[in-house]
Length: 386
Image: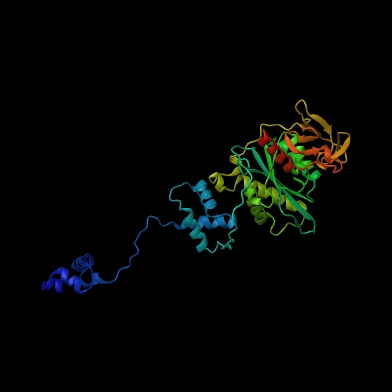
């Protein structure tokens, strides 16, 4: 009304009411168009939002979550994209909000931060299928009938493809070896196998090798051991174990046979249907292909360079050297080892290309060989002298 009367300037009027000239002109324009009715408070929310997801996307996301309760927003979005295309597809964060609004998201406990990082041993990086297979026993449990179940799992680290999830009744060398013979016939041989240090994969003996890992070496595969107490060095395989337990063993099946059926069904789902974030939301089956290294069942005998003394390990794990019986290890029973005399009275013991330790003639009463660590230390000291 004062603006219409023009008794004061527009600027001074706005200042007296404590508003900016921009706000004053906005109200004046509304008054000119609609009168006093135009000065009522209006909602600041826009009438339309181009980023608002349609209700149908929320329904589709909820349906997938109900079908796959362990999938997160990223995997659900990848599945929606494969089914319905990219057009108007909401972001993963929006899908997560939809699932949260539907009460389908459970909060996780925060983990305590660990101490300072310890330097890890160098492990090979898989850049193609069958370069590295990860092998482990998932923690054992009992089925409904009270029997023990030890799931043996094998995965290809490049494609995340699960080659095996077999319910065994014990973590024995014989049972594991039978499973691997079937895997090698079906998929061929990998270049490397990565395991932890526990039985039946490793031991406290020479080189940390067991009868099973010695057999792998005989077939031409390298064996990688993660550092003791560091399962994160086999992180992707350990993460798969958590999914395996949640989706197929909680609660356990009534019997080992029914539990194996669950494992088989879950493995097909994991390989064929479940998008994997590390693969750009592709399924592992699209990245895996059979190895070109065929398993013939023949175990080539270890060969050693000329100048090496070759000994066959006896049934008690001993060899004869310098007229004395010296203990090498039970893992090498029946195997041929090579001895290279590095200096008078001292010999390095090899199994294929692996240095197991050293034998010292002056320590004949000791009976065994020094572990690899001592052998490597002596080798470094020798190189320094040279």
